[in-house]
Length: 193
Image (cartoon, rainbow, N blue to C red; front, side, top):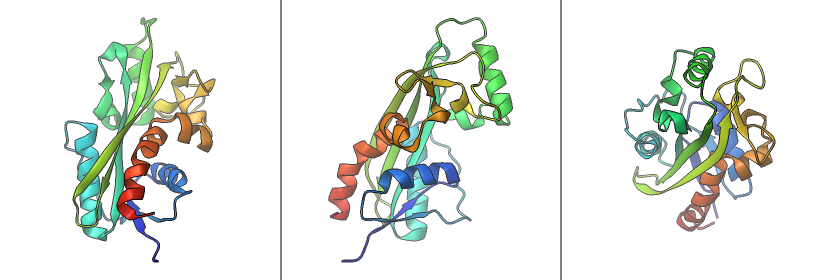
């Protein structure tokens, strides 16, 4: 029986390797999306944005496709920046500065990383989705230099920031890992693996 191919609809190499590691135990051939694929994330929810990416990639590659959309949701900011996390400011340094400035006087700094992962078939049809949440809090300064939101997000269970989680911790505690585990039964059933 031929090994099923699954495309990860993302141009972000770190995200691709993270999802690929989570799918590692399954008998799949994993590939990243074509380098010329660029999808505008115009959806109003994580599910809509993930679906836009997965649909486009599955139609181009004619393969099963997984995509995710995720963001940082800070309670004090009523869930912001949320789906706008990637576009919160022009670069990572400015994103961190902006977030820390908005929270400068706030003692209550609870937040979560939220990921929604979708599965599309080779014809470009939506099959199912799953959601994962990692709870934590925002530190008063980054734990390491040149980081993204992950360098500010403290995961109490792991006693480190999100950006310092190992691959196994990301699979167990990370929002994308939780979403991947929840989606796995649908993936196994649909691909007969």
